[in-house]
Length: 248
Image (cartoon, rainbow, N blue to C red):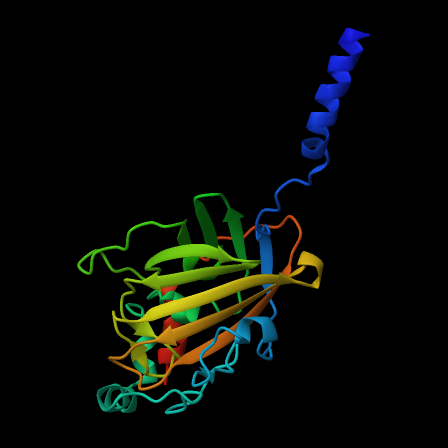
């Protein structure tokens, strides 16, 4: 009886712990994602965190702006002069056809991606140009200003509820709209990712701020559909395709 008494007492003390639900972790964004290659409307949940003065760029997927059309972005005088001097054929040579853009233009391109989500790191593989991004999670120190700049930059990330927030700096200059408007190495990209449709759709906002090139801010809204157990394939850019465009 004494043993049963102690067992009952221990069970009663442990009962609240046994009954308590496990702590809910962040949503899992891992998987293979196919771009919804169409213009999507601003997601209401993500739009709450986008500045009111940010213009929405409607060029997601294969859509592109024409010459001197920047979707509402206001280039600085120097950036505008550079865009006016842009020659599209300059990018259609064997030496330039396979130049890698930065994530500002690459993320919205019409190609799939994969995400591997861990506790301390999140890795995003883009099929376009075989690009790989690493999001450093948590309260990590910023990179110094003179740290290396790359086309994927340095990304710090954290969770705000069910949204993954990613801030990227240290980007090398590259195109914004693929028509002569290039960002500088001062570009800061702020992204938010969230799941919708029961986890089958991934939605992102990608906000751009570059005081050296832009007098305002811009944002793209991008969506992907979960694609089963597939994987991204090698891009294997062949620069010789530019020779076809160079023919008179």
